[in-house]
Image 1 (cartoon, one colour):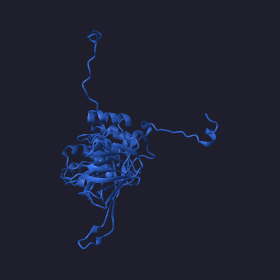
Image 2 (image 1 turned 120 degrees about the vertical axis):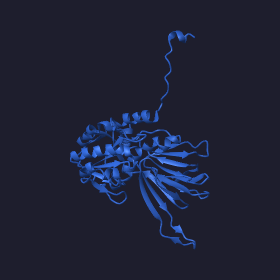
Image 3 (image 1 turned 60 degrees about the vertical axis):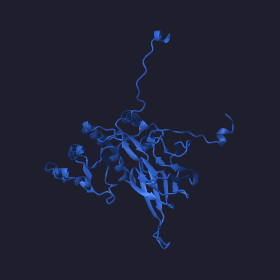
Image 4 (image 1 turned 90 degrees about the horizontal axis):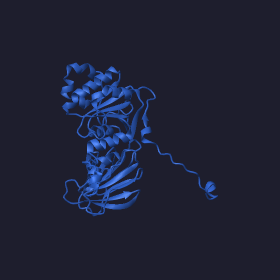
Length: 354
């Protein structure tokens, strides 16, 4: 090597962590658990009751949403009444339980996990998700052996994957009155998003026309049905349906995927995690746009409003059934039937001659 390398250029080494090395361990045994159940689903009533009885027998403090207990099939079950009395309840958007819960158990589909994520706008407890819904890409556990699996989580030392979220800030200008005055100041709202932010044309028949900025620089104008900004976890949701690649959740990235762009050359792109994206209506846009966050909180975006998106400091720790790599490829195979085709027949040496 050149003699000046060691003196003028510092030696740098890069350590890349093996995803399988990420483990959940407890400093002290967990005492409280939040059970998130998909409401208005009769098939989940029995698993929910069985799980809660098991957790109370383990002397766990069980948190359940008030609206879950409002179900007459639960509240009216006299045999379950003794367990209900031990529950701690809370209300979405009103009660903060972020410092009271050691881990979360989800009963339902992928939407149940997304909902559980939305309950925690900062640090999220580890999430154990049971596959009791329709797709189950994010829910690796089967309920058949829930007792041994939950016991293993309580004892600790299980594989875990940190699913990055997006921190989204929506700023809306003041409402313009008929006399030209502005009512109120600019309104700002913030969201934590696990799958994707979707900006679309809403009910309008016109193309959406929005400007996309990256770290303050205008990189393109999106003309089409809209644009998806997603996490790697969200790459296998709306983004892949719109033609994007599937990215493993351990990859630090943000995906930008146009929805039916009116351009043959607008391909989905991947940018580094941590960049700041901003989306605004173009000055010459014919109509407003609409935005939603993991399919919720849908709202209209008008001229002067802005959506700022970057990687959140608060990921969702998802407990793995085996490990992050095997679980992900199992989901690709079982849920999306990735690369499933009839295998080609073996060709014998005699057939090769023809």
